[in-house]
Length: 407
Image (cartoon, rainbow, N blue to C red; front, side, top):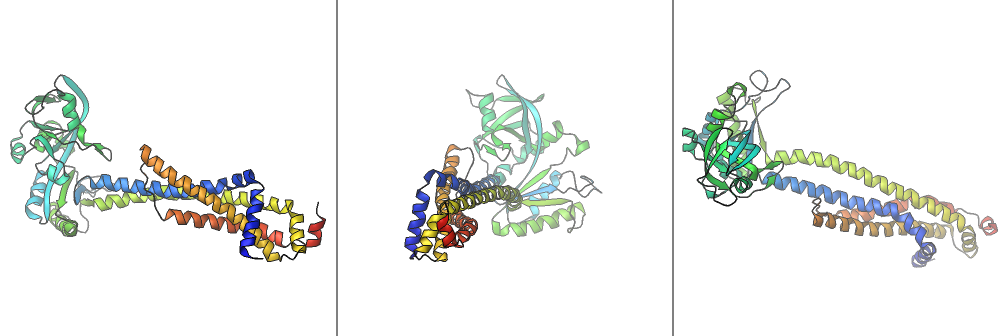
């Protein structure tokens, strides 16, 4: 019997019980859709993380205190922070960089324009911050080296803070109070939004030396910065810059360069760390999809076994008319594979549609992975062959005489 004729008989057999056939494919539909959505969600999450981290600044290197089980500081494997002199030394001695900036934060109450805002992040920083973090001033100016040298009481507002405090007038030249200290607003930053968990528009930027003087305690490393940002000129120079940083800071801190009291983090490092987290999430979803496909395969096997029992006389009649056992086996195997592939097609439509819908509604970023579509079809076909083989073999092994006597 030709393959086309066998395939036609298989389709006719499935068409006799349309509702049962559809219900049988549900497990495969869910499994295939889960595979596509799983990969789309995982790819979207990785892309979102990469975008957020890259938004921190171009070719950024973060210098941070190292940490051991004994904590920070001398004898503990790390330092509590970096003195301002380290920032100046990096700017003067490290080549291949666009800029360097330090950052120290404190949460304070900010008052201005008759409005009081609680728990606002006040960032003490240096003049290189906008260039290093790729963050521009839209009105006025940023903190200068002179402001830090003289500890001038000047402030630069994030865009949302500026709007909340001075909604009807320009903030530049206005006075605000941070805690009990009066500051003059000299600039407003561009709108940047939330990057990771940080709302850049809801921050106030002031000279680093003023943060040391007014808002941090020297007993707990308050006269040092917890992170130094260095922007390399290009990705090609990052390795050279990191090598220079390690050598320079090891000499200044009098530590072994092979066991420094600081660590260097790049955007790629953070992305790789985040990717390992999303990989765990992806593996979890993969198990869910696999279980769905196995459940669908068990459903196909169950229905095919029932079908063999219901069609015993038909099988006996076909064998009596000359059908070979392999023809019977092929017919029932094709029925199982057809169920799987139809389920796979519907699953692909559901997975692709679900991915685009989720992305369009903004509930979760999804990036459809083209390779997931053929992968889903192959998985569906494999399920049909694996779980359809036993019922097909059982049908082929029926004795034609016994089958014809079956009621």
